Amino acid sequence: MSVPLTLLGLLERGPSHGYDLKRDYDMFFGRGKPVRYSQVYATLSRLARDGKAVAGPVEQGAGPERRRYLITDDGVEDVERWLTEPAPPEPDLQSELFAKVVLALLLDRPADQYLDIQRAAHLERMRALTELKRSGGTLDLLLADHSIYRLEADLRWMDHTAARLDMLKQEVGR
Amino acid sequence: MSGGIQPASAGQAAGTTAMVKIIEARNLVRSFGETPALRGASLRVSPGEIVAVMGPSGSGKSTLLHCLAGILVPDEGEVWFGGQRLDTLSDDRRSTLRRDRFGFVFQSGQLVPELTAEENVALPLLLSGTRRGPAMTAARKWFPVLGLDGLEGRRSGELSGGQAQRVALARGLVADPEILFADEPTGSLDSMSGEMVMNLLTAAAREHGTTVILVTHDARVAAYADREVIVRDGKVSTLTGSEP
Image (cartoon, chains in turn orange, yellow):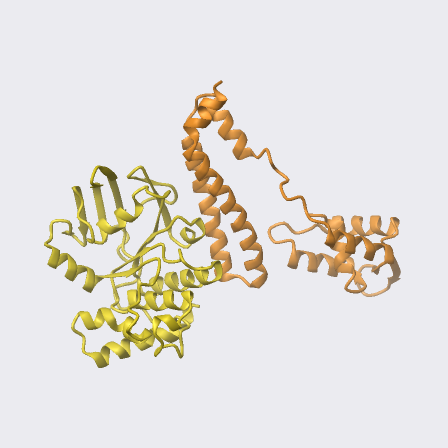
């Protein structure tokens, strides 16, 4: 996910301090992977340098110096373009799962055992995500569903692969 | 979700007898004609556990469930339930056992079309000899629990697939069974309805300490269970969680 464009998108709602942007980013997108303050401020500086945002005047207060950032028309255009572009539908065609199965077959190791171990790990993760859905809020549910459907796709691939191992073994053994 | 579930009766809470097996299959062999379905399948389930039985089509998972539930008798091997050998019981005694101590939910609700939803739910109690009044009262209690308020008088043709399956779930649970056998309980439902049924099924089972043996090919459904086993070529492999 693009952190700069996501922050820029959050900025489009209205002028914000870096502190507020980090809070909102973590709340919506940072589950399990919060963005660092240093990354937020470095990103805002780059966005300002590139004309996507402008920094307001320093606001004096009791705490450290703060300034609000505003999105520019250029920045709004970037967000708009990004939201209409599809994300890459298959970023990992040569996945680790695929590599391990093929290698196991090439080396005459038990690919079916590897698939069982992987299946168990996937199901365990799926169970944790299902629990998250049960106990979390709507955003947790949305996020967990996304991961669950991806895991399900992997599991279906594992089932198909397990059913074809003999055929695949002959193929890679040629 | 669990707020509306009825409280478990005393002594039924899951985990109180963690080392005890409520049901066990030992080396089951079962063929249909020349076609073997089970080739030495073994499974042990503890009280209050929710176990998903997975496996490809034709792997024998439904046959295993039917043998455990006493619907089918294995050609070889043993089925034990609560310290009692189940597979050697007469048809009548197995039938009584199923009626009094087991609950069932199948892929399509299999509701009796001539009966109303509440009569369908009350059916196991009526068949066990409970008088109509108390049976209907017990049945009606499940309607708000499963989000079926106001549908008590409808017949199965007037219910959506998800509603009918929740009525079937209520019917499976109304007699407070020790084990609920569920065979692809969400198989005919869309993903949202299936999710609702699974949430309700697992919440009700955990609340009552009901053991659930759930056959599914769907990993998303299996993820509601405490652990999964996979049936492959008529045998059972444990994938996740340690068998208690």
